[in-house]
Length: 126
Image (cartoon, rainbow, N blue to C red; front, top):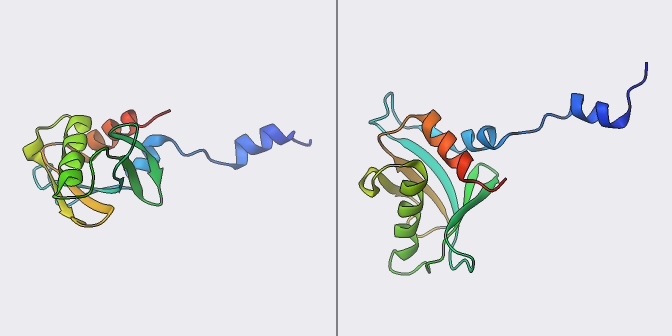
């Protein structure tokens, strides 16, 4: 029996969910949630439509930031965005790498990997 094209695509091509895509960008930095969770984020500063997470691409969560990349303004906005998205205080989020780069490593403390992945996946546009 021959399958139609639509059935063939549904069976053979696996669709990646937002949570699966985000999980590729998130890693635990220790054995407990107090050690922190690392999130790889690629930032686009000076975004015209505001500050938000826009998607996932090549192992990075994509974030549009309204602030310019001067005097640490964009880094502060990234920390605020991640804290608001994950539901932790700003003091529980810090930029661990990429202070002067668009590609940043952000650490989140006080949440599990599953909680961080779920929160970021829910914040992405559908």
